[in-house]
Length: 509
Image 1 (tube, rainbow, N blue to C red):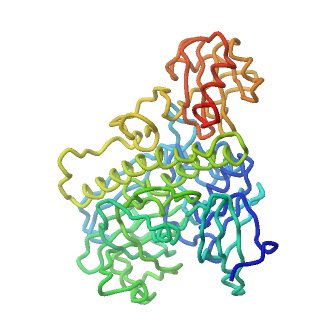
Image 2: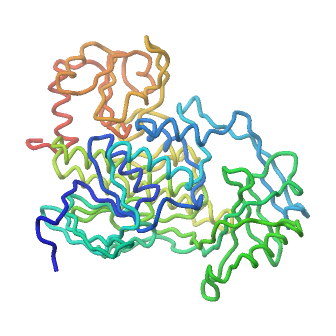
Image 3: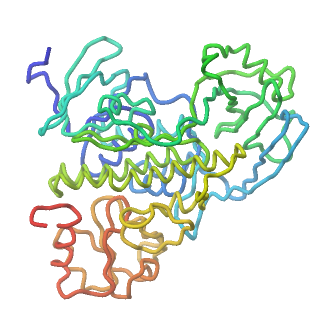
C-alpha cells in the first residue's frame, strides 16, 4: 500500500548507508549546497577500525570541507615516528625478520596534506559531526527496504528498525553506499566482475598490554606463523588497542565460534604472553576479494564505495577509493540539482570512476598475490603507490600511470604548488572545492569573474600545470583539471562559456 502524497517526504538525495563513504558523499554534497538524507540500519557509526589509513589525496578532498582540521588533527603522525614490522612465529619469537621504517606524515613536494593514520571508528564520528553541522540529516536504525524509479525520481520505502514504522521518501536521486553486499546493487541486478575471493578472515579488536614482547620501537604490524594460531596483529591509532586477524574456513566456522575464551587462548599463544588478559571489542568476518560492479549507475541510482567495488586490503586502497567516488559524484549531482548542468553530466560518473576503480582493485589484487607469494599474471605489474593514489586520470589513456609525475593535463588531479601572497603561504589546492575555479597568469582572464566563476590571477603555478606564463587552467570542484590554455585568448568569457557548455552538458553545447 502506497503512502498518500501528503505523507511522502521529498528530498534531493537519499543515501542508503551511513558509513565512511555515505557520510563523505553527504558532506561533499552539503558543501556544494545540497542537503542529503542518510539512512543507516545500524545504531551508530562503526565500532571497528576496519580502514585505518587515509592517503594524502583523500585528506586533500576533505581539505575543502569543515572536517579538514579535525581529520588532520586526529590522524596526525609526529614527524620522525619510527615503527617496526615483524615476521615471527609469535610476538615473543622466534623471529624470521624484523625491520623498522620511518613514517613520513607529509609529502611536501606532492601534497600539502599528510597521509593520516586514523581508524574508521574514529573518522566516521568526525564526518558525522561535520555533515550534521552542514544540515545533513542522518537517521540511524533506518533501513531501505525497497525502491522504484521513473523519470521524475526515486520512490523509496524506509523501515524504522526501532519502531517498525514504514515511511516513503521521494528523492531526485538515490545513492547506494551500502557495502559489499549492497541491497541497492542487488535490486538493480548489477553483476560484478573480477578475480573474486582471496579468502575469508575473522578479526577481533582488543585492548592489551603487549609491552613484555615489544622491541626497541613500537610495533605497527606483525605476520605470525605459529602453526596453531597464525595470523596478523596490527596496531591501531589507540594506545594498547590491537587487531588480530586469522584465516577463516566459512564452510566450517562462523564468527560465533570465536568466543572470548577462544580468542584469549589464541592471543596468549600468538603473543607469547601466557597470562595475557585482553579486553575485547567485538569480532567480525571479512573477505579479501576483487569485484567491481559492471556499471556504477542505473537511471537515477548510483553506487559508491564497497557497493561499487570490493578489493583486498593490501595497499589500503578500498576506503580511499570510495571517498574519491563520493567527491566525483557529489559535484556532478550538485551541478545538476542546482541547475548548472544538464542531466547527461551524471553519465560521466560511471565513465570516469569505473575504469579507475577497476584498475585500483587490480593493483590491490596484485599486491595480495605478491604477499601470498603467487606468480603475477603475464603482462601485469605493480605500479607505484603514488600512481594509484595521486596519479589516476579520467578520459583518454590508461586510468593509472606506472609512475606518478604531475602534469596538469585535463582529467588529472590539479597539482599542488605553494603560492606566496598577502595572506601568507597557501597551496593551489586551497583554492578549489566549491564550484569551478580558474587559475590565471594574466589579468586578461579576470573578466571571467562576471560569469560567477572564481578567478585567481597569481604567479608561480604555471610550470606545474603545463601552461605559459599568461595561460590559464580551469579546475573542477573535485580538484581535477577540466581544461587549460597555454596563453591568453581574445575573449576569455566566450572561451570559458563554450568550454563549460561542453563540460556541463548544457543545452546548445
